[in-house]
Amino acid sequence: MNKASVFNEMVNKRPQNMDGILETPTKPTFPRVIAVTSGKGGVGKTSVVGNLAIAFRRLGKRVLILDGDLGLANIDLIFGLNPKHNIRHVMSGEKDLAEVIIEGPEDIHIIPAGSGVHDLAHLTNGQKLNLLNEFDTLNEDFDIFLIDTGAGISSNIIYFNIAAQERIVVATCEPSSIRSACALMKVIFTEHGTKRFKLLANMVKDAQEARLVFENLCNEAAPLLGRISIEYLGFIPKDEHCEKAAKEQRPVLQRFPHCKSSKGFCELAERLLTSSAEGPSDGNIKFFWRKLMSCH
Ligand SMILES: Nc1ncnc2c1ncn2[C@@H]1O[C@H](COP(=O)(O)OP(=O)(O)OP(=O)(O)O)[C@@H](O)[C@H]1O
Ligand SMILES: [Mg+2]
Image (cartoon, rainbow, N blue to C red; front, side, top):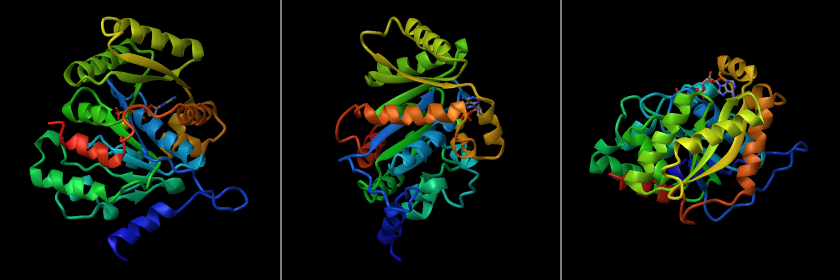
């Protein structure tokens, strides 16, 4: 089978409803490109990406995930996958994108991270071209493109954030998480002019504590407000089921679909879909890669 047909076969699989009837997702003109990011590590980005992907699938959306923590695979772990190839093989031209993309649970598609890919800024022109050519083949085959950016203010993380159409900043009630989230937004804005952010409070006790995370972040970012906007997106409660599911290398929404965090992920996906996509309407996957490759 040639590359195009392998890929078409992969992306044309549709979720079935309870009666086994194929659902036909309504296809927006462009996929939404959403980066999930944080200043501090361990606040729940990978959990958010993995579970949001499942929730979007169940709402009939075709989802592609990029594990953007390039040096340290994350998404493989939450889905219990062991990919043979990764984005490094696409950069080097050894593999086509279709050979590297793997299928996760519920027909989620994943571009695995590769060890040894440390800095997008140091890609050769040949490697950039390999990536661009391959991503051109993706076209509009997905409705949502989620990027797990990794944590901090290293250049890759900044580039993924500015190239994405929307940015979900994950923070917990820990002051260090809030401070580092603010530092990340500041770098993204001051160095690249990107202004719009959405805050997701994770591992909080309740709605009140989540609001406090938002208020504290706004206070910390006060000198920037007016120039940047931070939208409150909601919260995922702290839930022991997350840890239990993580130990089994499964997203909590699959393992414990009725627990409080799973409910939070479903509501979050619905909220995101009812809010319109931000940013330029050409914020599709191809555009994302072009922007990414021209960041440095
Ligand atoms: N809402 C939650 N309640 C309880 N535990 C959670 C919640 N969200 C995430 N966790 C747990 O917190 C730990 C860190 O989560 P995760 O790996 O998703 O964070 P991360 O931001 O991706 O970390 P890193 O920056 O290291 O990539 C995991 O063990 C995960 O199961
Ligand atoms: Mg992670």
